[in-house]
Image (cartoon, rainbow, N blue to C red; front, top):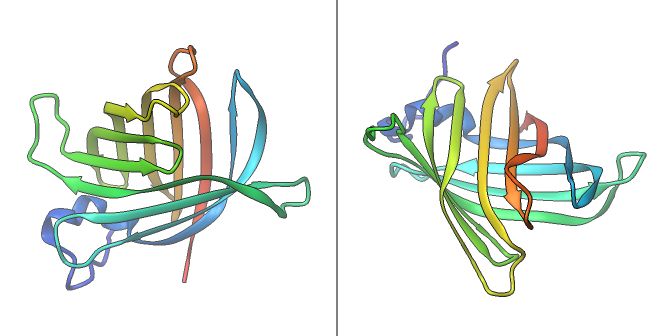
Length: 169
């Protein structure tokens, strides 16, 4: 697999270059404290030449016919390549959510795959309890596939969300 890098993309971002672009698709969200539901998602991952990527994701609930019903989650953040740590991690993902929490993930970026675990979660006293997350992103058959496990509201780390997104121009 070969990725053609934009001339302005910082060289440190090479392992994450496949994330750059606008993505849209659908997935499934569920948890023991909620009913499973289909959702739509749009992600925009961009750069300005510095050694980080900007990440913006928004999701919305879908009805049985695939129509948007109402907004769900929104997250904004940054992907940062970092020097390899003792645990092998070489990338950070910093995310902010309007529901009152901030996550810092650390993980390993390989060609077309990133696996991350929360290194820290901060939340407002008014936010729901959320203690840990584990995310995997992959570039599979030209699509962005991702899954997330979550520990929240007294539940242990377990499957929470998954989606398949296609690149859109």
